[in-house]
Image 1 (tube, helix red, strand yellow):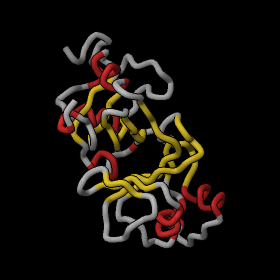
Image 2 (cartoon, one colour; image 1 turned 120 degrees about the vertical axis):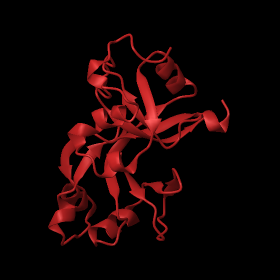
Image 3 (cartoon, one colour; image 1 turned 30 degrees about the vertical axis):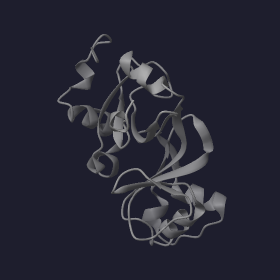
Length: 188
């Protein structure tokens, strides 16, 4: 594949027939996709934990009740003990960040959580535990076998759409009512 054929900065939408319990009815933000494989963060699976739980585990103080109540997501089945923050880009540099696009970063270092706790973090962010990963050529094969649809990333879906509506909202970008798709629909 050429660089332009990779799906970085795209949303991956699980097809209705995808039975894998890790991905059924999920939408994931594809952060890295290249010849070696892919990494995505599921953006519509809350864990039931909040940032208050993460702050407590890490010994981080926060006086903001609103920030403490921010939900934490299950980003995928790989390295669920590790945190990942998808966030809007800003002038602050974090220790472990990679750019996903001109506007979005993926960070996995403690310093961004400390900044968020002190209301000094990025304007928009989603905190997840774990990620979804695919080996070389695996995601491409899954797309060809109708496991996934992909659509360009929209920050509105990630940061402003209610969690339970993200899967449908992502598919709607393609003009698709995903609830009406059959198991044989998809890529031809």
